[in-house]
Amino acid sequence: MAGPGGSGGRPIRVGVIGAGFIAQVAHLHSLSRIDGVQLAGLAEPHEELRDAVARRFGIDRTVGDYRELLYGGGIDAMVVSLPRGAQSLVVADALDYVPAVLSEKPMAMTLAEAQRMLAAARRSGALWGVGYMKRHDIGVRQFVKLINGLRSNGSLGPILDVRMCDACAEYWVAKPDHVRRNGQRPVRFPEAARAPEFVPHTLTSDYEYTVNVASHDLNLLRMLFGDALTVKSFHVQRGGAQHATLATGEFLIGLTVVPASVGHWDQRVDVVFAKGQASLVLPSPLARQASASIVLATARGLEEMTVPPADHVWAFEAQTRAFIAAVASRGELEVSGEACVGDLELIDGLWRKVELN
Image (tube, rainbow, N blue to C red; front, top):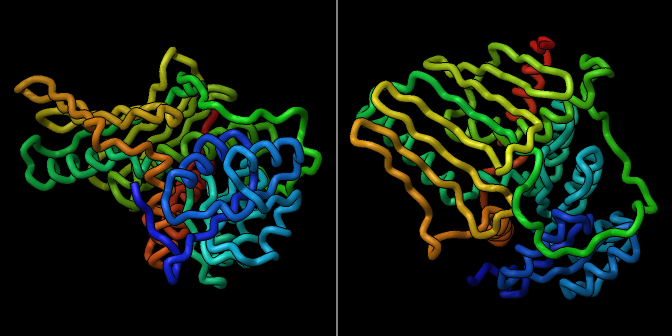
């Protein structure tokens, strides 16, 4: 599958900050499959890991300090894949020095930090994408078209209710082959605040769980139903399930996230119409051969819609291809920092209404 090159036909030179698990199995794997992309640098403080990953992906330029990669020039785009707390400060640095940045989700741990980063991106004019890869799943995109079509033609009547469940404490697929790190990183990356000041210290880990897990779900719900979602209620069982109720102005949305291992990746959306139900069933993010599937239940029976193998592209790779295409054309990114700040706005709103079970 071909990909776009840089200006003048030269490759797009991409650097990567972080050589951990997701950096290897998702970002570097995907970048290595795109024609017209050159893996032009790798920053990772753990020398043994850095060298092993560089050999695996044929990267000649390696550094221990990510700033050397930023300040050294010669990079068209940067991918940042670091622990959640360290993402925002490193990404903010990258936005000042590199024309385009793809960072992992969440874009930040707090709304205030997200807004600070967005201001940095606006100042620099850098292209900034956030790694909500599920938006790029072909099955997810088909589901969005289905829901929009059903709402437009009215064949199943109005939407009465929406439920989303996320019980995914484990990947439940074999992890792709990767280089394991021996010991801890010798250098700790600087980290921003883990939670807003109004969240009690005793609830920080629960807040982090919301940002890490529910942000994916909220991002998908915004993709389906727009940005005008408002928070009605939020209930948290410390160390357990979290239940949110959102309103669209027409119907309510119930979202449940729970750190449970139920034997499979259990993430789905059920849209209940007056005369039927459309359900989206999402695969494990590490299931490279699987797209999301759709089940439509009406008076005529059940209809399951799956993406044919010939049309399937792993969501991580589809995300990377969209990012590289935008870098090549200086076009717009659907999943941009500008677009994703709404996820942190909703999370901030949830935690301002939190009630403990």
